[in-house]
Image 1: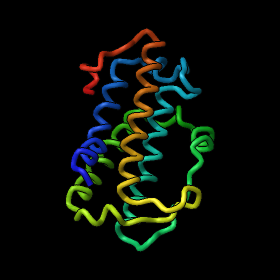
Image 2: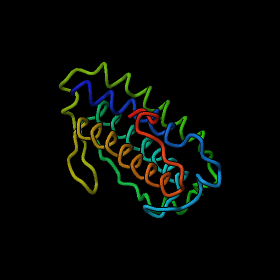
Image 3: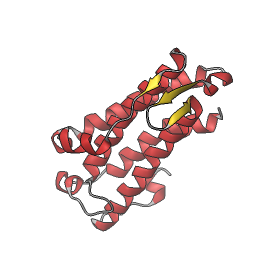
Image 4: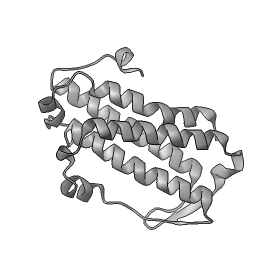
Length: 163
């Protein structure tokens, strides 16, 4: 696995935190689009999906062809009271989870990234594919947050955001 991909996975949380900086609670919970979620909801969503992703990756490393279950992100957002959760705690969970797991990823032999599990919807997925997918996942949602900031009249430069 290329070291750059692991570092991309590990560096995403700092970009996410920077993208949330300087906004009021009202701005964080506004829904200016794109999409239906607020910035706050997007961050809590990333925290939830990261917890699931890291569990999936651990299972692939530790078990032979584990079953990986899907998660209904819409149901999570609707039923887990995202606006009642702490944005700061969600950011901290993402930061700590990725920082801790990146330590594991950096120590693995190259062949470990070919290990796989079977996702109940997507089928066979390798550790390498999951690391790529979740690095992309955070960056995808970071793009939404930056667009939402622009619509709120609070854009930030890419230099200030750390990209």
